[in-house]
Each structure stands twice: as C-alpha cells, then as structure tokens.
Length: 117
Image 1 (cartoon, rainbow, N blue to C red):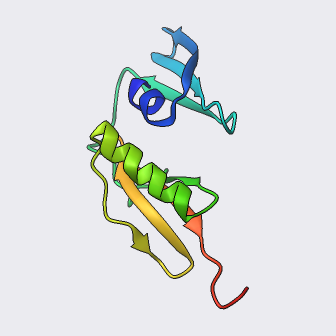
Image 2 (tube, helix red, strand yellow):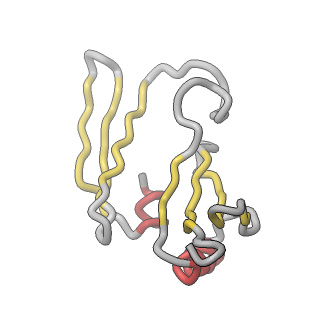
C-alpha cells in the first residue's frame, strides 16, 4: 500500500483484519479521480510469483488524458526511482509499463487519434 500511495499520491483510507478467514484488507484513495484501490493479503498464499498468464488479473491500466500526462508519469517514475519500460506505441495507444513490488503489471496509457479521427 505504501508503494501505491507514494506512486499515486493516494492516502490510506481503510484497514481491517479477519482472523477467522485469515486475511487483512485495506484500501487507498487516489485524490484526483477519487478511485479507490482495495488490497487483500491472505495469510496463506498459493503458487509462485505473479504472472499475467495465470487466471486472474492480467494487468492494471490507468488512462491519462494526453501525451503530456504520459510524459509526466514517466518523469514521476524516474523521480521515484521506479523501473519502467520505454514508451510503447501500440498503434492505437501509447503505453508506459512497469511492475509493482509484487510483480503485478501496471500500465499508464493514452489512446491515440490517428488519421484525423
């Protein structure tokens, strides 16, 4: 949670523990969009490291309004010392890809309007 709060400028808004079901739950609030990200940490884990090829979450994407905003995110990641890939022009979007501390794939992206459309 601390990593996401630092990355997004979010604040911690919820924490609770369920000993019967053996998990902790928490949430953060991103101030600009008011998006809430909720996290669940189970006491017993299955499998290995995260992979988008396993059933479940492939990646989490954050849309940005324009290329300037995407460039600003790239600068912020650099400022925070968070490793990321080079900008990826996919034809319909430009994406900035990275991984969180658990290896979960994240993406900031802007949709492109090409050919006057």
